[in-house]
Length: 581
Image (cartoon, rainbow, N blue to C red; front, side, top):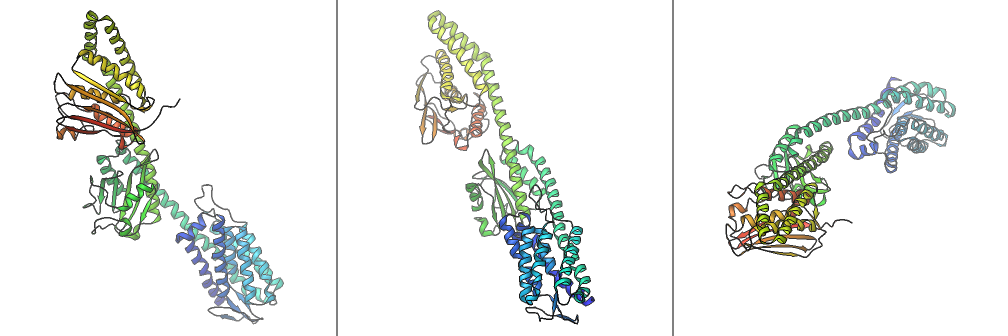
């Protein structure tokens, strides 16, 4: 009996091997953790193969209860029986796949057992199917979040294993020629060893699930810490300074060899291996990043060739690149690298995907806060313009002077002054207004300015688009005001400014051009991007406007400056958005 127990224990190892495969080989693990109809069919095939293997590796027992162990048991003599792990395989199939999987696997196991022996063994078909169904009744499906199978505990599986083996012994006692003699010899080893096998089978799976939960808990805590550390930087926007700090934080909290953050076309930060040629401010050097941006999907590489770095000495051998989105638009990428390809596992890929969602939300939050800040700044500027003593008194003085000469003209100027203030208040409340509303404010402003300086400026307007298109408030006024104040350097005559709004393709082209003295190249490169110190202003209005255009629309909408000794041109291309209603 002891020799039989040892031999059966060896056969049980096959089912333990199956449990190992189910939780450690990705295609098998997917079948266990996401049980669709297709997955159940595949589980049926896998367990059927193992039940057949269990039959083939069974231990032959003759009428004198002598044990004969062979490598492959393809055919039994009419007077022999077999001890194997078939019942364990069938019951495991039912526990992990449900009654239908268990019954189908039991049918295959019983039919193959009959083919091994004789027609007298046909009762094994009924017993195996019954065992598959009954063990399948212990199947609990998946938990509510569908992230793991809700299996029996190992001790519950042990109890199920005992019951299933007892059922098999009852069938043998009732229908086998050997009857009580065979049951008395094999019942003890078969019941104990196969029930322990069920216990071990479920223990392997339960241990993996527990470890996975612990790993997820640790990862969740790490991700929460990452989110807490990176939020202050992403709230300032996706730029060089914030990206550098975020990349350092991610590398500190993960085991990646290099971390990179990019916009759609250039590297913002790269920390770790490969930093000698993955240099911030330069264009991206990997094809994988370009693919992630174009496809808007996570890209994975397990070789240097798949990464596609243009530097032949690049040490990076594996990567996961996730697109960063704001309002469903890809604004950049988060790239995580390893110098050894085998280190990139599904755990790291899942982590990267989770960080993509968090960081995209943080960038969106930062842009929303920045947009609110810009609106507040615009509001302050508008309110300051309204109460600016210099502007206000100049306008009033112009009206006073005009009263003496032309009372009707003075009345018109007062109306324009009122319209200008009212338009400022409207611009404070809205992020976009119609072109018609913006032109009303611009014309009010120009009327007041040209009345103060008659014959100094000549303004040309060419509007060839629907005046219900939307654009940011103060846009045209800021561009025109900038030209009037800074373009002519005190010149008294011959000063011309052209304002045009037209449609080019699927965008609105807004352009303000002057014939002034031009802008120095070193100043021109900074306009719209940073403050420019000068005697006549700081350039904050242009910087504010440029940031608002990018935040509201996209980078293609930013201001473009060209200048020469013959004048300056400012151009922006905005998406066409028509006011509804």
